[in-house]
Length: 370
Image 1 (cartoon, one colour):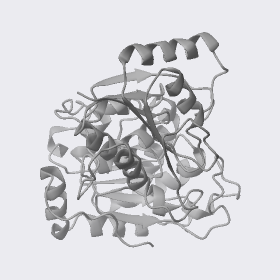
Image 2: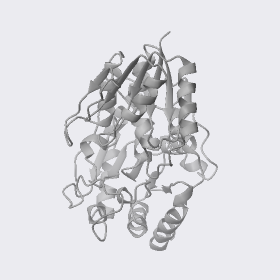
Image 3: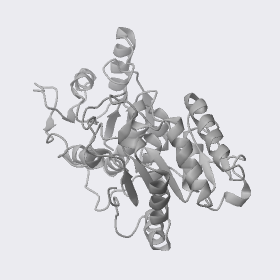
Image 4: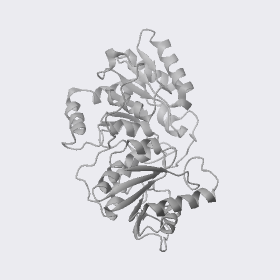
């Protein structure tokens, strides 16, 4: 059996977008996934992954570590001992596969595939090139191009997926809401420019509550303060509304369960947007245009894309908003979000979600821009 090393040294959302390519590779061999510590939880959720390996690469991530020579050489030794036949190195358009390709070559991997703007020398056996943004297709499709170059078949209808069964819903979600009777609002993001500010998120939660929706606010451990402020503001505007704070209360698999049971997810351009898509839940995407939506919008589920896509920050890859007031997103009103949620939760959308869950039916990638 062919042994394949897949590499995605980014965070959870990036790893989830690589899922269809991983499943395609698993059609031709056993696939192990080398992930960063910030992406390992998502890697363990992906169908088609045999073993997850971790490496904190000094050339990748928001705060990359200093070079650890011993750890790097240890990785080379581990990869050599595993006896991989092929390596597929998945990167975003502003990243280089060449540092990892060098380590893979040192480990004796015989066929290495990646996308590189820079001259790769002898480090890549298959070198793909990708048009500059906004061209080049979605990140899911770019990853599939790498998998196909490594010998995998191209799926007709790629979708994001996670392993099932997922954990039971947290007890913080009342039984009365567990059949999908709520909207998830996830205001935070690992990159601040792509998330919501608390005052804005609070008005959106209040608008959703006033429209009759139960609202579940989610976030990671570092986002507890943001979520708490969001919930407090929403309850101040709508004292009798159901607005729950689940921030820090689940791991990634538990969050997937919360998203899967939701009617809709309202979220910025961050990992939970892609996790929502992976469990088949429609997404209202408040998308900051610091990266192109053509490449990074939620994939494979009904989507409403909100936010000013022609704001001055467009394509800047800024981590912190360069414009006071975060206008590309703060201009999105509660009425805009309520209307977008309504458009995604009408009965006409149900067959699309059912088809996602069953793995059949036409693929629907996005709704309109507003």
